[in-house]
Amino acid sequence: MSSEAVIMSGRLMKNNQKYIIRHISSQDVADVYELHKVILANLRPGQECFIHHKKMSDFQRMVDNPDNLFIGTFVDGKLVGYASANFVNENNIDDVLPDFALDYEPNRIAVLEQASVNPEYRGNNLASIMNSVRQKVAYQQYHKKYAVTMVDIKNFYSYRNGFRNGMCITQATVDPDDGGHVIYMAKEIGKEVNFNVVQIPQELSYAEMDIENVSRLIEQGYVARGYDDSRQKVLFNKTNDFKYKNKTLRLESNLMYAAGQYDRNFI
Image 1 (cartoon, one colour):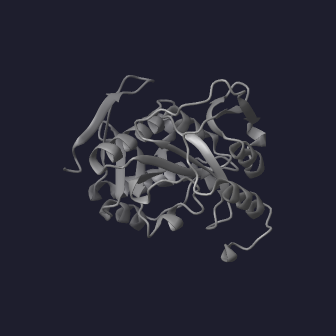
Image 2: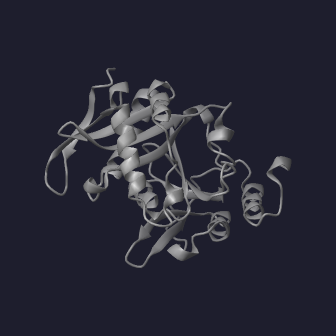
Image 3: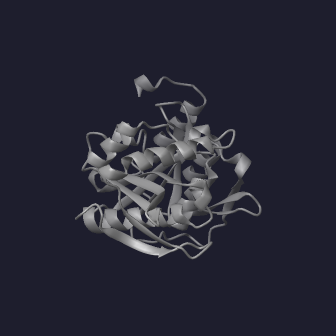
């Protein structure tokens, strides 16, 4: 399929301008890099860890890599947002998704990576829309079954986009690449999670979202399924829909890692 083919189109919520979403091509890489710099320049204090800095060559490699899905949102021919997905396999899953605990077939996973929108166009739900588009294309064209994303544990903007697309927080851990505290959000594409409605829901305030608190709830069978921004709460419900490779050991190791109680080289 041509990289210029339109995947979807719509109208911006704020001013009704038409936008299209299509695959990013080599001709777009310079524009992606310029937008990337704009987004980095507009990060607020404390948000520096939300986005990995990239070079123009990094974006070109994403375009050239057949295991990457790279899409952009355009308004009147101007790139206003971009998002990518990485398709992993048994050989690289531990590098891309370190310590990932769910029992998912690696070659059926689409890893949803950074979704970025020009600050001038925020408030149009574009990040969430691109999240949905990535899942749809990964499922229909690449036959992926699961969507997974890793985000900073304090990046509540990414939480919202994941929750809106049916993803749940299923794990909290430490990223060995940079020592950052992160959460995994996951879902089976095209399938809604079945929650145990008779169980009492739990919630954590935004300030309480850390590896220890999240892991304790997950160990009890909870996952985070949504948020209440007015009260600054993340909402948890019980479910049996997520199968863990070794749940107890994995969650205990996450807590020990966060506390600095062991050396990852000995895992």
